[in-house]
Length: 46
Length: 569
Image 1 (tube, each protein chain N blue to C red):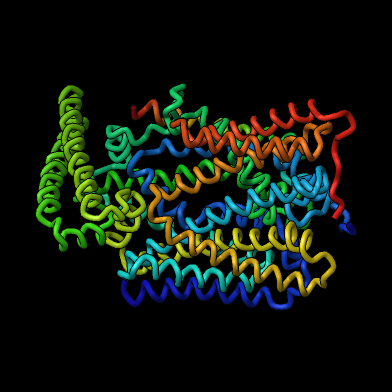
Image 2 (cartoon, rainbow over the protein chains, first blue to last red):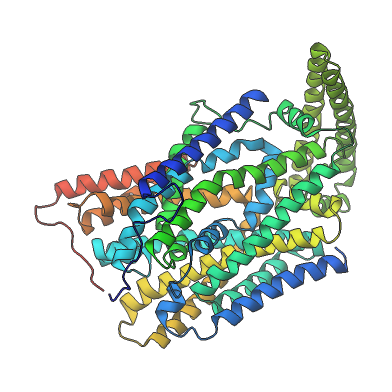
């Protein structure tokens, strides 16, 4: 069980998204944007 | 295929394989062979996770799915971002903290040996069979391109993959996958632009979408609650989330990929990369299939895309019926093309009533063409019951071979093989690891040297490769390949996920309750699958909920104090 110490696991290293919860919210936002765009495409060409 | 295509194909495949074999030299201990050197950065992990999931089936079968049914299949992936967030936040930190080789080792640490073995066994059965289907997919390409027998192609390509995989450890798998997915992206993007260039002159991208929409191919999101619909936003978000949670969170072929990360941060970012890219990637591949459908409205498609099967039966007894049906199909297709041109001309002229009338006429011609196709399939099946009548897996490769320029053909075929090798390497690597760590080292031979376990892992990897090849020989009996893989996964994944959710979130439930709860839930899923006709995605949810629910009930019935026992090995 001699695991090397985890480094920087609380720092995301992403510009503008400094905490992991903010990264998850961003990913969720991208998901909702895609669903919205696909729903719009469906409505536009139905 | 000409000399240029073969040069591109073999250059790419041999180059990547040689790189993988070169990179694996010097890997002698079990940790580096199974987990890699744990120096992998997030981008490599992200591409490796993507490459493991995106097999050759993804790139051969999914465009065919788009051609037949449109964009609706994209909903299958709606649950993936949600699942990946949960895995990054909850599963991953625990796996890394416990320093496990396999996901099932975690079950042993949390519950007991029998529950660990049950989880590992469910994975081995499901993934071993699924691996057979993923060997079958590239075999279709080769048998179509080379005119080889399908069974000979399955055996020869399968053995080649086994050879490549056995020599490579987890590190090499991760790294070669990065280059393989690069080849895949270049190939698919090239196909997209060549396809756009091959659409008829004067047909804009907007026109192409109008035609696709007119034939109901752009129904990407379905909000209906009809349980008989295979793909709706509800099955996608709920069933798809459970499927993705099971696959990415508990399937060793994926867990092994992100456990190779240099740190928790690198592994998390690799997963988030997939959470962002998964839906657009699948949408793009389905859109390719939809555009191939539009292309074939102006270029007569074959009545049956598996042309080898059609030509064989046409030359052996059923020729008269098949040629008559082909004639009907051609007449309907010609009428359809004529009506589509009228429809677009009326649309450009701003005459909505004429456009609507032409569209109705085009849809009627489409119905006649589909009827001829359906009857053709019936004739083929009557002539030889073994003939696979679902030809959607042949759509994209037929388009590539018949309509793309040389060089690009070689690149696309190389992309299919790169995808096949990358996913196969990940799967066989995981099957070998699980058999070695969870069964061989844990049950059979406990105190051998590292070199012995590495040799055992290579042997088990090779054996699983042979099992996969054996199963692949029967895969031609299943319908659309991508669905077959997902159906197989959905039958087992829900219960495995249930085991892990109990482990993570129900601290008072012990190994005995979890073990019997999982067995009962798996039995329930088998029973429901054989009697109901609901969307297969629901079985992910049902299996998971049943496993959790039954485990809770059993734990309540057990005497107090019979909680979690742990398996420290």
